[in-house]
Length: 127
Image 1 (cartoon, one colour):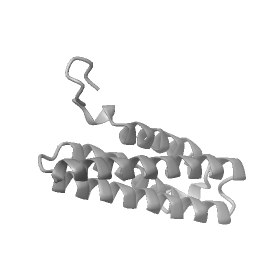
Image 2 (image 1 turned 90 degrees about the vertical axis):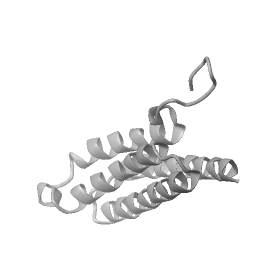
Image 3 (image 1 turned 90 degrees about the horizontal axis):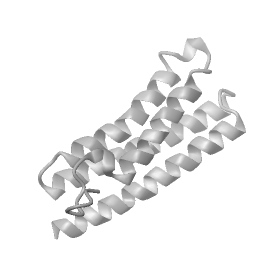
Image 4 (image 1 turned 45 degrees about the vertical axis):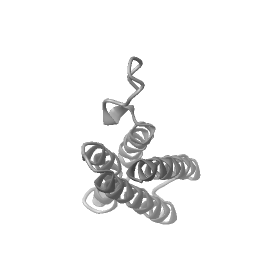
């Protein structure tokens, strides 16, 4: 947040983006240990879904109308859910340890909740 005006000047100042970015980095680090044959399968899918979270937050932030912002934030939330599904699959096929699964799952829940708050806040401004 800009200390002088109290307003957010960049998408990188949004808590949703910051926590989403942490999730992206976690996904990249953890999937480095997945089997090489998954590079164009689950690894690619997981990474693309995770990157989509922060990309949609950034794109939504750049939109002028609150209706457009909200749509991008909802798309970001859907990508969080996609990551949740993919980490469940990764755990169930033995690619994720319980600890790594729990770490990722907890972060996805955190990001999803923060996005929900961002959406609610944006809806208030849209009214």
